[in-house]
Length: 179
Image (cartoon, rainbow, N blue to C red; front, top):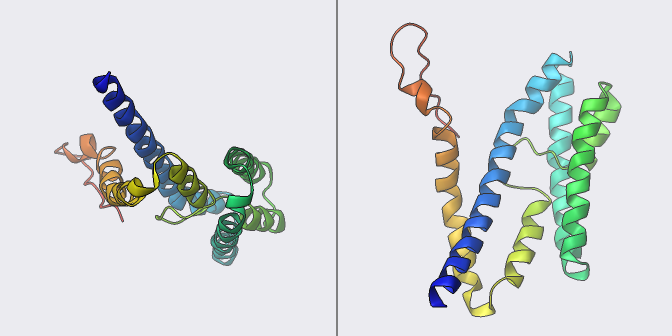
C-alpha cells in the first residue's frame, strides 16, 4: 500500500517534470525555427524583427491577462482554450505568407521565440499545480520545479548533440553550447 502510494507520487512528479521539459524543448526549437521560417518565406530583417517583437509583446500581454483571470474560470477550460490557440497559431503561420496577417497571428498567438518558458501556459500550469498538493507543501513543489528546469534545459541541449560531438575526422561537427 505504501509502495503504491510512493510510486503514484513519483509518477505524478515525473509527469509534471516531463511536461515542463517537453514544453521547454518546444520553445527552444521555436526560438530558431521562427526566424529561419520567415527568412525562407522571403521576409527582410525588419519584417522578421517586427514579427518576432509581436510574438514577445503578445506573449507578455496574454500571460498577464491569463494570470488575472485564471482563478475565475475552470483550469481545464483555460488549458483547452490555450491549446486551441496554440493550434490556431501554428495553422495561421503555415497558411499565410503575408506580413500583416502574420503580425496579427504573432501578437494574438502563443508563439514565443525566447529561450525562457514564458507563455500563456506558465500561469495556468502554476495554478493547476497549486491544486495538486496541500498548502504546506506548495513551496517545496515550486522549488523543485524551478530548480529542476536548468538541469532539464542542459540535458535537452546536450543529448541531441552527443553522437555528433563524439565523431572525429573529416566532417566532424563540434557541439554548440546551449543558451
